[in-house]
Image (tube, one colour):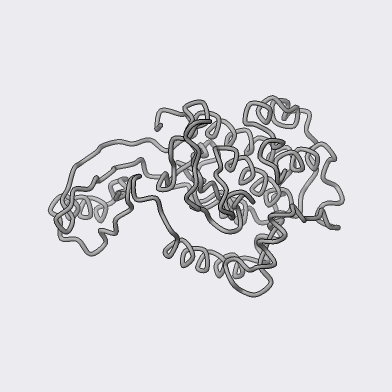
Length: 291
């Protein structure tokens, strides 16, 4: 799938042995521009506008459309997996981390609950089978955060996900509170409503999303300054804590072992990996992901 313009490129593949089992070393392009939200946080006094949010959502949508056209569900679309390939203003936003990605179709639905709590679709939380429309819910959550700086669903208990948060997700209970949403266009709010439909059959498809005026006519989207940068900056410590909780939740999550397994090679003495580490230490732009 790495041929998409907004999907991280795979540079090389190597087969390796890890604890007596075969695994793959995947060499990907270095995404030195950092995470999407981190880039917005460091803008300082430079306003982040609704039009910019529209352009970013179009790029993310392009990546998802590329996957969905091949009947692949990513299943872990979140800001941490959206990285820029350069620190320059011309840096391209790309989707990364395909550890939960899997092929799906009408006759081959998904059932294993692989997700990050803040961005999970309601159907993934339950025993029912689901499909690639779960990515569209995650897209709606990211769009919501881009426009205000905080998520539509969150836990009040300090846990990665709580019973109350699960209930709100399943019922689709969220708001557009002031002052953060006071100046956001109704068109943007309506688009979020179409993405955060609890019934996946009623949820907007990626084709409908890409054809929506707020996405494909971004030049007419208002250049209204948003509260996003301020909120993300003020809540930066909270987001760090959230990431820690989510990382812990993902580590204990049930994974479908028929798909590619994620292996931790940090402590490995593999010759190829050591060679790559030495190159990285000398400043070469190379990133090793292990599967």
